[in-house]
Picture 1: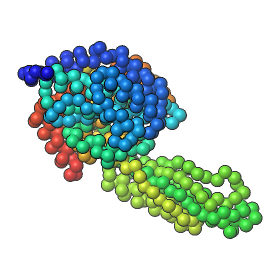
Picture 2: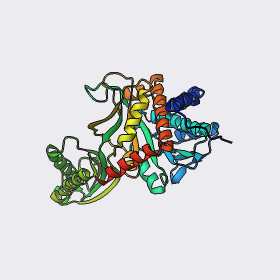
Picture 3: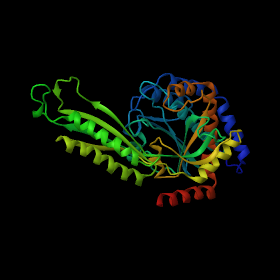
Picture 4: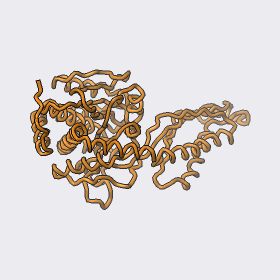
Length: 410
């Protein structure tokens, strides 16, 4: 039975966090290596799911596998009463280039944080709970959005996670990480053009060319690009195109990703891109079917959580910015979480060759190194200490909650 003790100092908490993870260094490294060595894409992360669940069960935790209706999600909760602190574990990889976004390190830092905070709550007998949530399909698939809809975040007070990046994240800035970083909102448009087949040499005038519709829509967006805001992005993949040249194609298919720094900006840009696609259909006489999905919102930064991260990383001799005004023009479904509760999504630097950046093969290699693992564990320790403060410091929690409420109203 846990015995209530006098509230420990933050130095005591740091010492307890270090002690809690010391004996798990080897097994944590093995878990990290297992995920990195077996990259799996969105909703196919079966090996990662099983490896993490096996690891947690070996540490004595009760784990819900295949949680919330997703085959590769899981949930572990420890503690009782008090506030609930969530740590998100991502583990999906990229097609063809493995863990080039370093999600094995996200899992490592979140698992370390969960283990450390669980140990703190047990050691000091403090009311409070912590949740480790397996969040598949961040790259493509919107796992967190589906988990929100399924109720996985119901009752959570604070959500915490960290993402690896290059040590020189911002040119000219002397820091190896940042507590809060702005990211674009993003949504997808799937389009299918339907025309009419005809012999391309014999009677092409009888055809309605679905390839022309697709190419015209693509060129329309290319013309639009000169009017995009500096941090806005639009990209496209052709999914179904003709395989022969002597038939007027009756069907083509593509999908678009549209990004803007704010949700309002995204909605405006989406309308323009829709017009470009529909104009391609109109100009060629084709019909077009549009389906929009996978909304990733922008991330609502929380100044209190960012400041506490900077402080705790500083206690491990890491030079970290509290936040940065530059928008990283990628997107993440953690933004959706930041719209329903105070959320921290940090970026931490790992050693790598010059020019290494997420979604490049060189970053996949960097994410598998011992040095990267060390950084992920340090980050996990800092996240655990933030979780502790959000459970035990009423004033600090209310400050973070108030900032979030104000931010959501903007």
